[in-house]
Image (tube, rainbow, N blue to C red):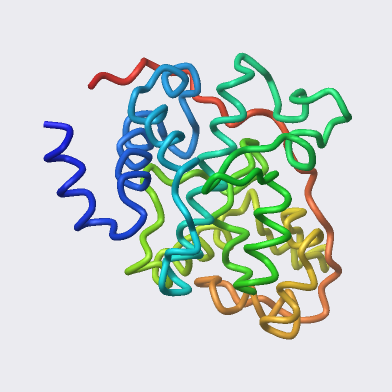
Length: 245
């Protein structure tokens, strides 16, 4: 049964199977409304197998830019979950590590393709400079409530552009991430727009212009003062009824 599943998964996911297929099964089972059932994920055999497959998968074998970007987004999200479950229960990823509150991202190493990578090396050393697609900021999930919500499925190379557009639209039209307060002359934004302002400006000329690509309904007026919302580092932990196979 397992070999049949992996055979079918290979045709569905391409060169990154079985990692994608195994991770996809785990996500569908343990992600609910963008939150992660970390307690369930910790003992999920598909997720454990996905972690093993990721450690052995060589990203240099991927042929296209879409394949590589989808892979690295999925890898980042899987490794965040791996880091959380290895330390679970915790209330925040800022609790992980002994060298300060950002150890989880800057110091903790994970194996991808036989090589050690930190989360910051994947995001800032590979995804941002190599692919230069700011929509990736709405796909990378750092294990916190301030992050974009986690999809209950992997990212797919063959439809990545549409999926990234969908993620950008969802984020841009969520009033907890982007809010126009015309009475105050303020555009209130997630701190993601502050931290990665250069990425958005390089892609569209300004944050406002980038927003206009994905906002629906209300126009984004110019001349508003930018204010940034507090970022929640509380764990994006789901504590509902455990999933069943």
